Length: 153
Image (cartoon, rainbow, N blue to C red; front, side):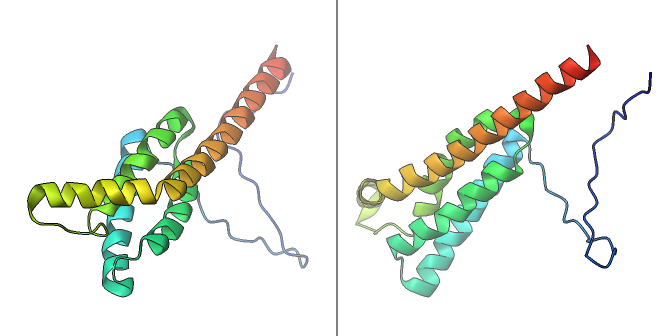
């Protein structure tokens, strides 16, 4: 009986002329790397939004969606469960430069909570997108695992 290769499968896509198409490797982040990536990117986008658009909350919400998609696609299979936890935390972290500033610490917190309350649609939508992508990846992983168990057993 022929032995199956144990390493990762590499698919080579080819042009119609027969030349191989170069593949961009998909990054795989650990749970901690996923949290750091998402929080750092949302904080950077928050500062960018403040600088370019004068702290526009709708722009910040729109920028949040691709970060959710990237986070859900780039996390390792073993750490899929962390994405729906990390994404809302990073949304709040990125709101720090965007939220309205009041007098003192309490004014800052009021501005942050107000921004979280008024932008809850973006927060829930991005978390739902990330959770949906993670769920699809989880189901595909389970199907591959059961198919592999059937073939070997």
